[in-house]
Amino acid sequence: MDKKTRASNGKGHTYKNGNSYRTVIKQKGLVVTASAKSIQESRRLAREKLQEKMNASLAQQMTSEKLRLKEFLFDWLENEHQHNIAHSTYRRYHSLARCFIAPILGDEYLVAINPQKIGEILSQMRSEGQSARSLQQARALLSNCLDHAESLELIQSNPVRKVKNPQVKPKPVSPLTIEEVKRLLETYKGTFMGARLHVALVCGLRQGEALGLTWNDIDLENGLIHLNRQAQRVGRETKFVPLKTVRSQRTVVLAEESVHSLRILRNLQTSHHLVSGSNFENELVFPGSDGSFKSSQEDYRDWQKALKLCGISPRRLHDARHTAATLMYSQGVGIETISRALGHSSSAITSRLYVHSAEEPLRRAAEVVNLLLE
Image 1 (cartoon, one colour):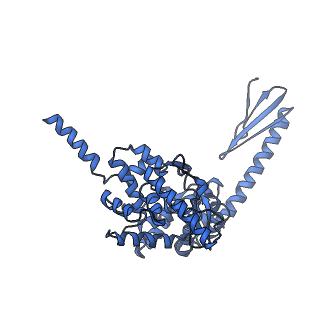
Image 2 (cartoon, rainbow, N blue to C red):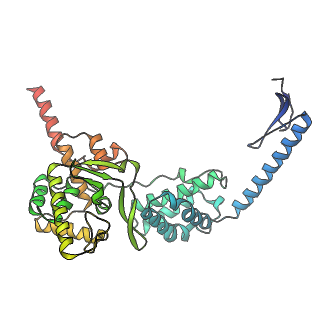
Image 3 (cartoon, rainbow, N blue to C red):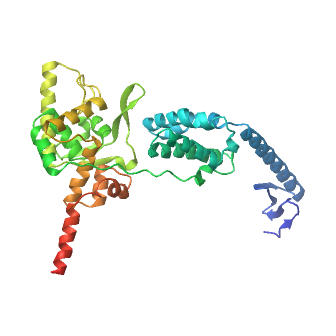
């Protein structure tokens, strides 16, 4: 490669590259290259490319200066981001954008958005009684949106990075005791509800995962549940949708009692279908009365009725998932194994959300230390 020929005042430099000459110009953050058979032609082409880039950058800057936040936000959310998130998340984001972000900042020009104005949205939401979690979601929505604007060079940097993320107080975990679990399972043994309780309390499936189960997902011979999708409300209908994360796609190993409860449910459904002549095309494990998806509201009511019948104080249905994790942990099952069983994206989530209140492992640890002191 021959010695480079340098030029001043942002004109770049030209060097021999094989049988041709290449010119590289760097100016105001822009970089262009051009190759030609002569030095003069290489420089001319490079200057033309630079001018085209500068014109395009100027036009984009003028466009962004006139672009309002609400125009960019709703266009990005509906035409791009919607396809990368769950439908329930999209509905939540759209609601936040419509009810809080657009009324406060929607008419601001995109390039004029700054940390102080984003803070105004969060302060307004807080004063109206919105939860810290809602504030987090609004900040996340704006951050993702303005990250996209930054990648398109519509803004120089994302101002959300300078806004502190609101802190959320963790909801108190209220798992059932082993005595309460046994009472529930014994009370509903041999019934339709018995298998549903096993899937919730022993397997720790999310509600959507349980309501989206079909018999094709269950291998009773080997005691396995293969989870690849869930039931979720999309618009006015419930349908199968992908699971929450990649790690949510998993195989759950069933306890022997859980297999037995599912066998009973299968037999009950088979005899019921033969008697009633109902059409259960989806082969859902926990269907509604007509064989279609059971509503989450009806499923929740059944859960509360079961608790009340057994003299157990009301709990969230999600507390059944807490229970499964806490019971496994109390019996010495490792955090990573529990995390895989529950389909968490990381074991840190499992430790933080589900097992921090389990006392049995702590008691065993105290006993071990006590033996050293004797």
